[in-house]
Image 1 (cartoon, rainbow over the protein chains, first blue to last red):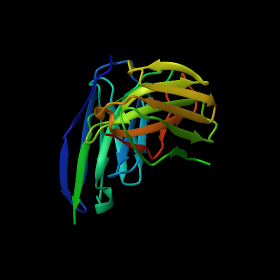
Image 2: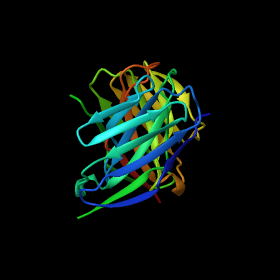
Image 3: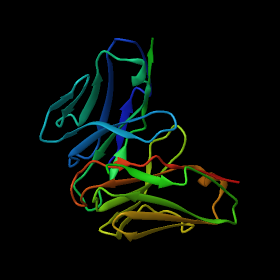
Image 4: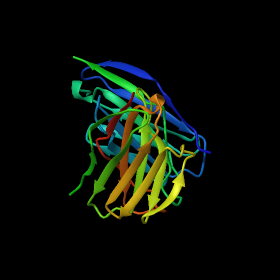
Length: 113
Length: 114
């Protein structure tokens, strides 16, 4: 089955700096890669996603890149703000009956003012 | 309505109690999910319902019993739970089974088993 690794497990950056979180997946058939942000005590919320037919996607300060050959994808946050502090989960999914996401273990991002 | 709702927000139960968690969405989604999330861990899939039918059961103990009464509602019935079942239980929904599609999560029910 699919296995998703995520690095680093914790990341501290100064406000205004960039943050990069990387995930690798094992199943080359996976074709959908969402990123979720989860603040303490809150629900996971989708912040950006990418499908396997696209190499990069950007939404304001957030971007995701996908390298299908190497089976890795990365989240890039520019001009970080204290409200970006949260746990970020990547996931990989196959086109199958009942959408089985496999989540990475998470990255705790702290943005220091 | 673009939200998944869950009740109750918090639940404390003894090991002999029977309780139920409820999830509701009115986005017309036909896939609904139950996840269990322990502290500092990612969500862990428990059950998937597609078109109101159970399609995935990730080897979950029988003390957890899911039910999908209609396309908008998802229940999780709890009976004879163990303290290690204490966790955040998240419901999610997505548009159509069989398609890679975004899952939208509810706020969760924080369950404590004494």
